[in-house]
Length: 313
Image 1: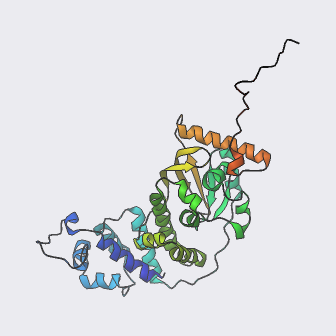
Image 2: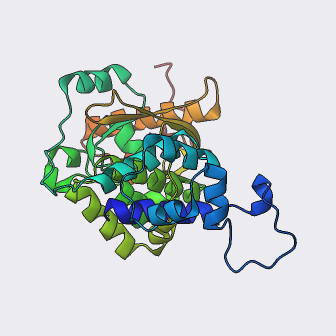
Image 3: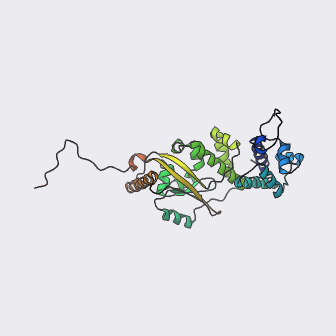
Protein backbone atom coordinates (compact mmCIF):
# COMPACT_ATOMS: atom_id res chain seq x y z
CA UNK A 1 0.00 0.00 0.00
CA UNK A 2 2.71 2.45 -1.01
CA UNK A 3 1.92 5.99 -1.98
CA UNK A 4 2.68 5.33 -5.63
CA UNK A 5 -0.09 2.76 -5.88
CA UNK A 6 -2.55 4.84 -3.89
CA UNK A 7 -2.00 7.96 -5.98
CA UNK A 8 -2.25 6.20 -9.33
CA UNK A 9 -5.26 4.11 -8.33
CA UNK A 10 -7.06 7.14 -6.87
CA UNK A 11 -6.56 9.25 -10.01
CA UNK A 12 -7.56 6.42 -12.33
CA UNK A 13 -10.66 5.55 -10.29
CA UNK A 14 -11.84 9.15 -10.09
CA UNK A 15 -11.19 9.68 -13.80
CA UNK A 16 -13.22 6.57 -14.68
CA UNK A 17 -16.19 7.83 -12.64
CA UNK A 18 -16.72 10.91 -14.83
CA UNK A 19 -18.77 10.88 -17.97
CA UNK A 20 -17.49 13.34 -20.58
CA UNK A 21 -20.93 14.94 -20.84
CA UNK A 22 -20.87 15.74 -17.13
CA UNK A 23 -18.12 18.30 -17.60
CA UNK A 24 -18.76 19.46 -21.14
CA UNK A 25 -16.23 17.29 -23.02
CA UNK A 26 -17.61 16.61 -26.54
CA UNK A 27 -17.52 12.99 -27.77
CA UNK A 28 -19.15 13.50 -31.18
CA UNK A 29 -21.05 10.23 -30.80
CA UNK A 30 -17.93 8.07 -30.87
CA UNK A 31 -17.76 4.74 -29.10
CA UNK A 32 -15.31 4.82 -26.20
CA UNK A 33 -13.32 1.78 -25.09
CA UNK A 34 -12.85 2.96 -21.51
CA UNK A 35 -15.38 4.42 -19.05
CA UNK A 36 -15.04 7.99 -17.95
CA UNK A 37 -12.50 10.53 -19.11
CA UNK A 38 -9.41 9.73 -21.10
CA UNK A 39 -6.07 10.78 -19.74
CA UNK A 40 -5.62 13.42 -22.41
CA UNK A 41 -9.05 14.90 -21.64
CA UNK A 42 -8.32 15.21 -17.93
CA UNK A 43 -4.85 16.61 -18.64
CA UNK A 44 -6.43 19.27 -20.87
CA UNK A 45 -8.90 20.22 -18.14
CA UNK A 46 -6.10 20.44 -15.58
CA UNK A 47 -3.81 22.43 -17.86
CA UNK A 48 -0.95 19.91 -17.90
CA UNK A 49 0.54 17.87 -20.71
CA UNK A 50 -0.83 14.40 -21.39
CA UNK A 51 2.60 12.83 -21.04
CA UNK A 52 3.13 14.47 -17.64
CA UNK A 53 -0.27 13.40 -16.34
CA UNK A 54 0.30 9.86 -17.63
CA UNK A 55 3.62 9.64 -15.78
CA UNK A 56 1.94 10.96 -12.64
CA UNK A 57 -0.87 8.39 -12.81
CA UNK A 58 1.65 5.61 -13.45
CA UNK A 59 3.78 6.67 -10.50
CA UNK A 60 6.73 7.75 -12.64
CA UNK A 61 6.69 11.45 -11.69
CA UNK A 62 6.99 11.84 -7.91
CA UNK A 63 7.57 15.59 -7.97
CA UNK A 64 4.10 16.99 -8.64
CA UNK A 65 3.81 20.49 -7.19
CA UNK A 66 0.92 21.54 -4.94
CA UNK A 67 -0.28 23.81 -7.75
CA UNK A 68 -0.47 20.91 -10.22
CA UNK A 69 -2.27 18.74 -7.67
CA UNK A 70 -4.78 21.53 -7.05
CA UNK A 71 -5.35 21.85 -10.79
CA UNK A 72 -6.00 18.11 -11.09
CA UNK A 73 -8.27 18.24 -8.03
CA UNK A 74 -10.25 21.03 -9.66
CA UNK A 75 -10.58 19.10 -12.91
CA UNK A 76 -11.82 16.05 -11.00
CA UNK A 77 -14.13 18.23 -8.89
CA UNK A 78 -12.79 16.81 -5.65
CA UNK A 79 -14.27 17.99 -2.38
CA UNK A 80 -12.07 19.24 0.47
CA UNK A 81 -11.50 15.80 2.00
CA UNK A 82 -10.57 14.32 -1.37
CA UNK A 83 -8.29 17.26 -2.16
CA UNK A 84 -6.38 16.80 1.11
CA UNK A 85 -6.17 13.07 0.43
CA UNK A 86 -4.67 13.71 -3.01
CA UNK A 87 -1.97 15.89 -1.46
CA UNK A 88 -1.31 13.34 1.30
CA UNK A 89 -0.77 10.38 -1.03
CA UNK A 90 1.40 12.52 -3.29
CA UNK A 91 3.60 13.36 -0.29
CA UNK A 92 3.96 9.67 0.48
CA UNK A 93 5.13 9.13 -3.08
CA UNK A 94 7.82 11.80 -2.72
CA UNK A 95 9.54 10.16 0.22
CA UNK A 96 10.28 6.69 1.45
CA UNK A 97 8.42 5.98 4.66
CA UNK A 98 9.94 3.66 7.19
CA UNK A 99 7.51 1.26 8.80
CA UNK A 100 7.63 1.49 12.54
CA UNK A 101 5.77 0.16 15.50
CA UNK A 102 3.11 2.77 16.29
CA UNK A 103 3.12 4.35 19.72
CA UNK A 104 0.18 3.23 21.87
CA UNK A 105 -2.71 5.68 21.94
CA UNK A 106 -4.01 6.62 25.37
CA UNK A 107 -7.02 8.51 26.63
CA UNK A 108 -6.03 11.86 28.17
CA UNK A 109 -7.42 12.73 31.58
CA UNK A 110 -9.32 15.64 30.04
CA UNK A 111 -11.09 13.25 27.67
CA UNK A 112 -12.10 10.96 30.52
CA UNK A 113 -13.49 13.98 32.35
CA UNK A 114 -15.45 14.85 29.22
CA UNK A 115 -17.02 11.38 29.22
CA UNK A 116 -18.04 11.87 32.84
CA UNK A 117 -19.60 15.27 32.08
CA UNK A 118 -21.63 13.77 29.21
CA UNK A 119 -23.48 11.60 31.73
CA UNK A 120 -26.16 9.56 29.95
CA UNK A 121 -25.24 10.83 26.46
CA UNK A 122 -23.71 7.84 24.60
CA UNK A 123 -20.04 8.41 23.82
CA UNK A 124 -17.02 6.34 22.81
CA UNK A 125 -13.35 7.25 22.38
CA UNK A 126 -11.64 5.90 19.24
CA UNK A 127 -8.03 5.71 18.14
CA UNK A 128 -7.17 6.64 14.57
CA UNK A 129 -7.46 2.92 13.73
CA UNK A 130 -10.96 2.96 15.32
CA UNK A 131 -9.88 0.90 18.34
CA UNK A 132 -12.23 1.61 21.25
CA UNK A 133 -10.05 3.22 23.92
CA UNK A 134 -12.93 4.06 26.28
CA UNK A 135 -16.70 4.42 26.42
CA UNK A 136 -19.27 5.47 28.96
CA UNK A 137 -22.01 3.05 30.01
CA UNK A 138 -24.62 4.32 27.56
CA UNK A 139 -22.07 4.45 24.74
CA UNK A 140 -21.23 0.83 25.41
CA UNK A 141 -24.93 -0.10 25.59
CA UNK A 142 -25.80 1.70 22.36
CA UNK A 143 -22.89 0.68 20.13
CA UNK A 144 -21.78 -2.72 21.45
CA UNK A 145 -23.76 -3.81 24.48
CA UNK A 146 -23.08 -7.47 23.67
CA UNK A 147 -19.40 -6.98 24.47
CA UNK A 148 -17.69 -6.75 27.84
CA UNK A 149 -17.97 -3.27 29.34
CA UNK A 150 -14.34 -3.40 30.51
CA UNK A 151 -12.87 -4.58 27.19
CA UNK A 152 -11.35 -1.18 26.23
CA UNK A 153 -9.28 -1.16 29.43
CA UNK A 154 -7.22 -4.17 28.23
CA UNK A 155 -5.22 -3.34 25.05
CA UNK A 156 -5.26 -6.94 23.81
CA UNK A 157 -9.07 -7.12 24.11
CA UNK A 158 -10.02 -3.70 22.75
CA UNK A 159 -12.84 -3.81 20.23
CA UNK A 160 -12.25 -2.19 16.86
CA UNK A 161 -15.27 -0.39 15.41
CA UNK A 162 -14.31 -0.90 11.76
CA UNK A 163 -13.90 -4.61 12.42
CA UNK A 164 -17.23 -4.72 14.26
CA UNK A 165 -19.10 -2.90 11.48
CA UNK A 166 -17.92 -5.38 8.83
CA UNK A 167 -17.45 -8.63 10.75
CA UNK A 168 -19.85 -8.54 13.73
CA UNK A 169 -23.46 -9.50 13.01
CA UNK A 170 -24.79 -7.67 16.08
CA UNK A 171 -23.27 -4.32 15.06
CA UNK A 172 -24.19 -4.88 11.43
CA UNK A 173 -27.83 -5.37 12.40
CA UNK A 174 -27.80 -2.15 14.45
CA UNK A 175 -27.81 0.04 11.33
CA UNK A 176 -30.91 0.21 9.15
CA UNK A 177 -28.71 1.57 6.35
CA UNK A 178 -25.69 -0.63 6.92
CA UNK A 179 -24.09 0.10 3.51
CA UNK A 180 -24.16 3.83 4.29
CA UNK A 181 -22.45 3.27 7.63
CA UNK A 182 -19.92 0.91 6.05
CA UNK A 183 -19.01 3.40 3.31
CA UNK A 184 -18.49 6.10 5.93
CA UNK A 185 -16.08 3.82 7.83
CA UNK A 186 -14.13 3.02 4.66
CA UNK A 187 -13.98 6.66 3.59
CA UNK A 188 -12.56 7.70 6.94
CA UNK A 189 -9.99 4.88 6.94
CA UNK A 190 -8.77 6.09 3.54
CA UNK A 191 -8.14 9.54 4.98
CA UNK A 192 -6.27 8.13 7.98
CA UNK A 193 -4.20 5.71 5.88
CA UNK A 194 -2.93 8.57 3.72
CA UNK A 195 -2.08 10.66 6.78
CA UNK A 196 -0.26 7.80 8.56
CA UNK A 197 1.43 5.68 5.87
CA UNK A 198 3.98 4.40 8.40
CA UNK A 199 1.33 2.87 10.71
CA UNK A 200 1.87 -0.86 10.21
CA UNK A 201 -0.97 -1.79 12.58
CA UNK A 202 -3.41 0.27 10.53
CA UNK A 203 -2.38 -1.35 7.26
CA UNK A 204 -2.57 -4.79 8.90
CA UNK A 205 -6.18 -3.98 9.84
CA UNK A 206 -6.95 -2.94 6.26
CA UNK A 207 -5.43 -6.17 4.97
CA UNK A 208 -7.45 -8.22 7.44
CA UNK A 209 -10.72 -6.52 6.51
CA UNK A 210 -10.00 -6.90 2.79
CA UNK A 211 -9.34 -10.63 3.25
CA UNK A 212 -12.33 -11.34 5.49
CA UNK A 213 -14.97 -9.07 3.93
CA UNK A 214 -15.64 -8.93 0.20
CA UNK A 215 -17.82 -5.88 0.84
CA UNK A 216 -14.94 -4.03 2.47
CA UNK A 217 -12.60 -4.98 -0.38
CA UNK A 218 -15.10 -3.69 -2.94
CA UNK A 219 -15.66 -0.41 -1.08
CA UNK A 220 -11.93 0.08 -0.58
CA UNK A 221 -11.31 -0.38 -4.31
CA UNK A 222 -13.84 2.39 -4.99
CA UNK A 223 -11.43 4.90 -3.38
CA UNK A 224 -14.10 6.73 -1.45
CA UNK A 225 -12.55 9.46 0.68
CA UNK A 226 -14.56 11.11 3.43
CA UNK A 227 -13.56 12.32 6.86
CA UNK A 228 -16.13 11.36 9.51
CA UNK A 229 -17.43 14.47 11.26
CA UNK A 230 -21.17 13.98 11.64
CA UNK A 231 -23.97 11.88 10.14
CA UNK A 232 -27.53 10.76 10.91
CA UNK A 233 -28.10 7.04 11.44
CA UNK A 234 -31.22 5.03 12.10
CA UNK A 235 -30.33 2.32 14.56
CA UNK A 236 -32.39 -0.77 15.45
CA UNK A 237 -31.43 -1.40 19.03
CA UNK A 238 -32.32 -4.79 20.54
CA UNK A 239 -33.39 -3.23 23.86
CA UNK A 240 -35.18 0.00 22.98
CA UNK A 241 -36.08 -0.39 19.32
CA UNK A 242 -35.61 2.21 16.56
CA UNK A 243 -33.39 5.17 17.45
CA UNK A 244 -32.30 7.94 15.08
CA UNK A 245 -29.07 9.52 16.27
CA UNK A 246 -26.56 12.04 15.03
CA UNK A 247 -23.09 10.58 15.44
CA UNK A 248 -20.65 13.48 15.82
CA UNK A 249 -16.88 13.02 15.84
CA UNK A 250 -14.88 15.52 17.84
CA UNK A 251 -11.11 15.77 17.79
CA UNK A 252 -8.54 18.43 18.55
CA UNK A 253 -6.28 17.03 15.84
CA UNK A 254 -4.05 15.41 18.44
CA UNK A 255 -4.92 12.25 20.28
CA UNK A 256 -8.08 10.16 20.02
CA UNK A 257 -11.51 11.07 18.66
CA UNK A 258 -14.67 11.26 20.77
CA UNK A 259 -17.84 10.05 19.01
CA UNK A 260 -21.06 11.27 20.62
CA UNK A 261 -24.60 10.15 19.73
CA UNK A 262 -27.29 12.81 20.17
CA UNK A 263 -31.02 12.90 19.46
CA UNK A 264 -33.63 15.54 18.71
CA UNK A 265 -35.24 17.08 21.78
CA UNK A 266 -38.71 15.72 22.50
CA UNK A 267 -38.39 12.95 19.91
CA UNK A 268 -39.15 9.24 20.40
CA UNK A 269 -35.43 8.66 19.91
CA UNK A 270 -34.62 10.92 22.86
CA UNK A 271 -37.08 8.89 24.96
CA UNK A 272 -35.52 5.64 23.75
CA UNK A 273 -32.04 6.77 24.79
CA UNK A 274 -33.40 7.81 28.18
CA UNK A 275 -34.84 4.31 28.56
CA UNK A 276 -31.49 2.82 27.52
CA UNK A 277 -29.71 4.96 30.13
CA UNK A 278 -32.19 3.76 32.75
CA UNK A 279 -31.65 0.13 31.75
CA UNK A 280 -27.90 0.66 31.81
CA UNK A 281 -28.04 2.09 35.32
CA UNK A 282 -30.20 -0.74 36.60
CA UNK A 283 -27.98 -3.32 34.95
CA UNK A 284 -24.90 -1.76 36.52
CA UNK A 285 -26.52 -1.90 39.94
CA UNK A 286 -27.18 -5.62 39.45
CA UNK A 287 -23.75 -6.23 37.94
CA UNK A 288 -25.29 -7.47 34.69
CA UNK A 289 -25.77 -5.52 31.45
CA UNK A 290 -26.80 -8.32 29.12
CA UNK A 291 -29.78 -7.68 26.79
CA UNK A 292 -31.93 -10.18 28.68
CA UNK A 293 -31.41 -8.61 32.10
CA UNK A 294 -30.78 -4.95 31.34
CA UNK A 295 -34.34 -4.27 30.22
CA UNK A 296 -36.29 -2.29 32.85
CA UNK A 297 -38.48 -4.63 34.85
CA UNK A 298 -42.21 -3.76 34.82
CA UNK A 299 -44.00 -3.56 38.11
CA UNK A 300 -46.01 -6.73 38.85
CA UNK A 301 -49.75 -6.40 38.32
CA UNK A 302 -52.39 -8.38 40.26
CA UNK A 303 -54.12 -11.13 38.37
CA UNK A 304 -57.46 -10.21 36.79
CA UNK A 305 -59.40 -12.58 39.04
CA UNK A 306 -57.51 -11.84 42.24
CA UNK A 307 -59.20 -10.25 45.23
CA UNK A 308 -57.71 -7.10 46.74
CA UNK A 309 -56.71 -7.56 50.37
CA UNK A 310 -59.02 -6.14 53.05
CA UNK A 311 -57.14 -3.15 54.54
CA UNK A 312 -59.89 -2.28 57.08
CA UNK A 313 -58.48 -4.50 59.80
